[in-house]
Amino acid sequence: MADTKSGRDKQARDAERRQIQRDISEARERGDELEPTPDPPTECHRRGCSEPVAFSVTERYQEETGAGAVEATAFLCVDHTAVESPMNLDDAYEGYVFHVEPVAAGDGN
Image (cartoon, rainbow, N blue to C red; front, top):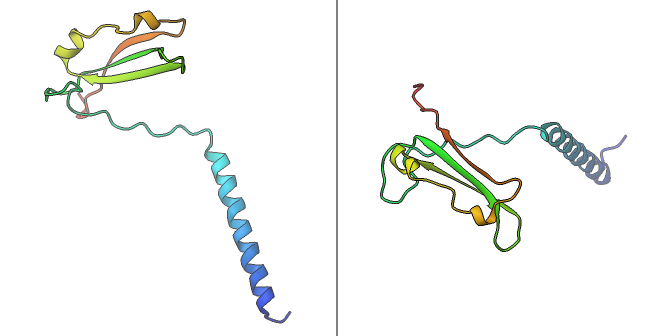
């Protein structure tokens, strides 16, 4: 087969099509993988507090605008966690959540 411009163009299109098919196939294989979770911050979420994070406080409630459920998480020091309480009880529903979880120390403690 002679080397022609149309032959080279066809080979380039075929190679591009194969690459796209490989990319799609790989994306489908990765589709069930979870996104990596970012490391939590090291300092308390409250403004002006530089204490280390000890707990994550999460609340899930219905948005007042009717847009659906909203989930908010704050990473707090021990003192600020002690005074934290549910804020959106008026918007509580069957899926309402308020929970406090300790944050694992990054140094292995």
